[in-house]
Image: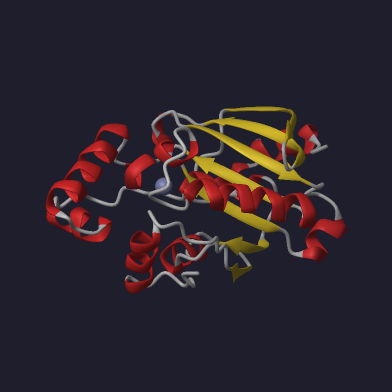
Amino acid sequence: MIDMTQIQERTNSVPQVAPSEDVPSQIAQTQLKTRYGEFQLLGFRFGPRHNNQEIMALVKGDCWSAQWRESLPYVRVHSKCTTSEVFGSLQCDCADQMALAEQIIEEHQGIIIYLDQEARGNGLFAKVEIYKYMEQHKVSAHKAWEELNAPDKRDYSTAAAILHLLDIRAFRLLTNNPEKYLALSALGFETIQREPLEVPATPYDREYLLDKQRHGHLLHVF
Ligand SMILES: [Zn+2]
């Protein structure tokens, strides 16, 4: 179990933990049994500076231990995808990536931080609009984002604040997205190694994955 007293102490010493970010105003902890194993489930509530964001994280292992630090824990920072994760859409790889991340973290220890930023942070309605535009105009996701001039509002500062709070300074980031790697690298960590998180394509998301590949994502489409 994560030692909540240590978290409380670190919460009270904001400047040492996350110099440029707010820390969560509330933290809750329990256990969660999943099909991939049993994890610690953490809840974080941030203040108005972060739009009162509520964030969940799954943790395997004791982040205060030397063993954890020496093992360079795995970290997945995952943005919500309702169509895939709730409705079972086959048009993207998000749910499969989450399942794989849970399996890797169950085996090797680490943390999954789940951010409520659907459709690049534009929300549920924007997701429907983007899918509609892709369908109507027969264009890729990237093209649709471009043509609709929709901003990328994804923000990793709360994820960074959680990692700082848990004293996770060096880790392996599970991502195929070099931009996410760069964004987190800019937020004050000692070492971040990128680890791929590749899942098999389906007939419905093959084009989507190839599109991601063309736009710099480091992945194989298989
Ligand atoms: Zn998705």
